[in-house]
Image (cartoon, rainbow, N blue to C red; front, top):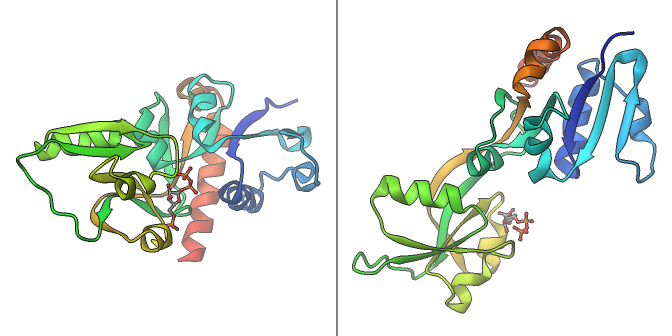
Length: 212
Ligand code: PRP
């Protein structure tokens, strides 16, 4: 029997889209479409085993080799810098990492800027590149509240449609980097299971071409 390709998918809406792409690429696993709360599915015939994991944890499973490949947002890769190969941009889950603040925000260079974020590493690297002194206030969610309540001057967060910012009277000050979902691979998994991974990448590239 051929060795299983272990694939970590981000649970949720993005993961559904990603699985649909894998399915079209010939890596289908019908059991995954059954409605239940299972987290591991396999199709031995096809040589694939899928795991649904928390989106921010995909890279951890791949880095540790429990999953050979997975799909993670560029935001997570930039924030945690996992030791994995980034193989392909899947052109889905598109958004941007941005600095945002209250609509009347004025950046006073005399003061250390207070930055609230879930993405401390990205924020630190960005402001270092700008030569700007900052204090990071690390939060775990609902970041938009921080400048409204005066906890921070700005936020560094993901902006997709911009609705959350608008409805909270905040505005983008600057885009740091565009974000999208990436196919990633464990470094030794990539060598040992190169054949199915290469086949997957070829099929995915074709799909992306067709959609253009
Ligand atoms: C993300 C992000 C913004 C929102 C942006 O939040 O942190 O709050 O989505 O989307 P929009 O531009 O389309 O409004 P998420 O839902 O992941 O929750 P959390 O960060 O508050 O945990």
